Image (cartoon, rainbow, N blue to C red; front, side, top):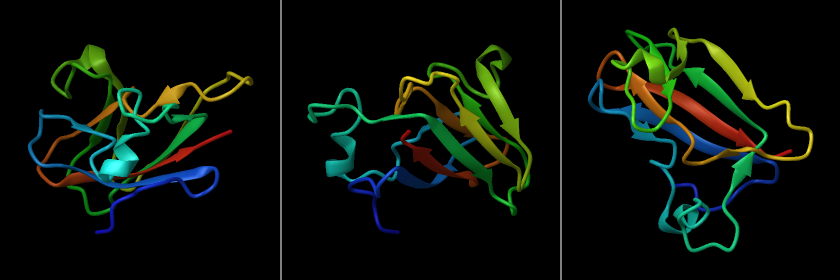
Length: 126
């Protein structure tokens, strides 16, 4: 799979985010190349990437749910689950902030009920 190195206009396809071990969340940046990593808030780019929304599509062949969670949590800590996606479900996580982009690459993690559970993610810049 090709790694994402730079954005494509307002769309930043982050690819298929795959969870190797349930209960061990993975970063949305897992498919970014070293150049793409520079767009994280801790990277070397002058500006960190931020988004107005994330488009999420759970894999249709997942055998359990996938979860969008806060960093520091997992699917086992229900106080950190933002949303749960059943297999094949689509969700657009958006902000009501009309002044710009509020979600960064490091605001969320992905967890899953089963190994190899995945979600396709795209960040959208307003």
